[in-house]
Amino acid sequence: MRLKRLIANVDGVKSIFMMRDELIVSVRDDEVPRRIVDVAAQAGIKVDEIAECTPTLDLVYREAVSRL
Image (cartoon, rainbow, N blue to C red):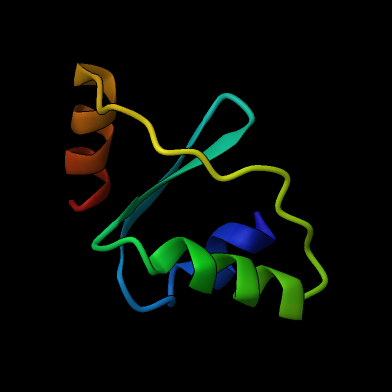
């Protein structure tokens, strides 16, 4: 996925993985989502939604595995 490759280099992105048809991105601070939208917009990609979510056990596991 092109967006995943682009935002992997955004400062403050800790991990990225796909879950169903969504990108789940773990970030260090509240400014990172704005930077993600800016990078996407510069590449001509429209971000439909950014939402904060409460980590589930599945999300915590996937984030841990994505770091390996």
